[in-house]
Amino acid sequence: MLIAKEKRKENIAEYILYIWQVEDIIRACNFDIEIISQRVISQFSGSSKAVNDIKDWYIDLILMMHEEGVKENGHLKMVKKLINELQILHNDLIYKIKVSKYLELYYWALPNIKEFEIRLNGKTSGEVETCLNAIYALLLLRLQKKDVSGETLDTMHTFSNLLAYLSAHFKKMEENKYRH
Image (cartoon, rainbow, N blue to C red; front, top):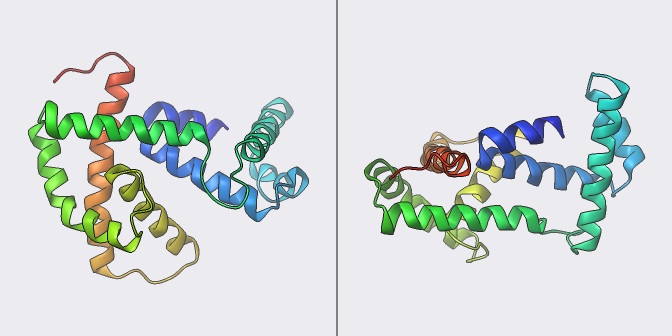
């Protein structure tokens, strides 16, 4: 919860990836708050109030996942909404505002985005979600301690640069400091 709050405030792409990871942790623990407490929450140091707040946060997420029907797979509506907002901003930066640095990053990443979209069989809501899925796949490979080729790392670098720039614009927009 504390990590999520900080990530939400500072970098929206990292926040989304973090929530995806938490969703997977909840699934891996069979939606059992006691298992989550033993394996995850016990790792947090802090006051008992902070630990209880974290536990409550996990309970809320478990309930939302049940209510929204994302027990087996999929993502919470709040996350989908954020991805949609990022996709709209992404499109605005490319087609309406035409921010030169963003266009440069986009065209650098575009062949990789198209290649990854093919691998996903069109199962994303847009280019932003494609980039997020690719970065998340890399995260999972690293967690499994699997080798990652230099070519794959170069591809992921194009995605991460694009998402970092997009996240910075999103933060400015939320802070009402957005200027074209």
